[in-house]
Amino acid sequence: MVLTVEHVAKSYGSRAVLRDASLHAGHGQLVGVVGENGAGKTTLLRILSGDLDADAGTVHVDGTLGYCPQHPVLDDELTPRQHLRLFQIAYRLPGLNRAESLFQELGLAAYERQPVKTLSSGTRQKLNLIVALMHDPEVLLLDEPYQGFDWETYMRFWDIAHHLREAGRTVVIVSHLAYDTQRLDALYRLSDGRLHPAPATGAHG
Ligand SMILES: Nc1ncnc2c1ncn2[C@@H]1O[C@H](COP(=O)(O)OP(=O)(O)OP(=O)(O)O)[C@@H](O)[C@H]1O
Image (cartoon, rainbow, N blue to C red; front, side, top):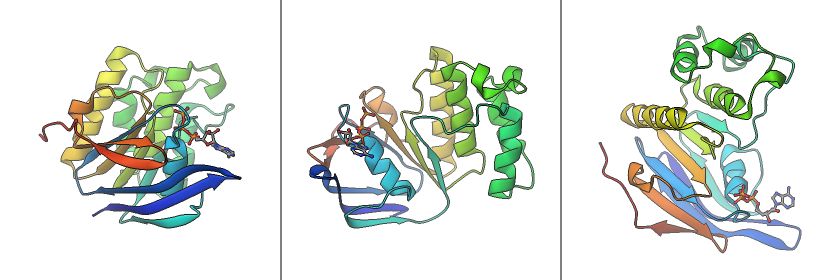
């Protein structure tokens, strides 16, 4: 397994959000996690990304990680192009080929020299996604990745997700809506602090 989550628990003060959450994902799997607002999906992804410590349980990630948080962590004063340069250095990438093709694919090229503060929320979300994908990580954690996307971009998102699967990447997609579950290899429903395997899985390939 590339991603193994066993018996993870997390409370904020006296409020138990995750009680006993377990999940397993292998190479080339698209895994969905759905749950109501406040179910603990972001808490789970933050723990998987290493951004937050669990109170109990174990998380094992075999490979490089990309994390696309729900709220873009971008610098308002910098342009998309400057973000690419910044993350190229942070990820120690020799070139920007992959980022450039994602820029084209998601239609961000027209905005590449505008400060982020002048961009629409959907356009910021595209940049947020590119930043998470540009180093081609083996495991991708995407928190509500298509929030604010128009229909065409939403469909492009799924094209990208399917290409990642074909390339053997493991992708965890969190959403409060159980849309498009037929596109996934596995689906979990997060409720009562537990991840319940749900039946709606799609055909692989
Ligand atoms: N840092 C924090 N301190 C205290 N409580 C928190 C913190 N972060 C989240 N919570 C609480 O934990 C619960 C789960 O929050 P979380 O953001 O993980 O849910 P979610 O499933 O991602 O929700 P949504 O679909 O609305 O994004 C909520 O009740 C939230 O208020």
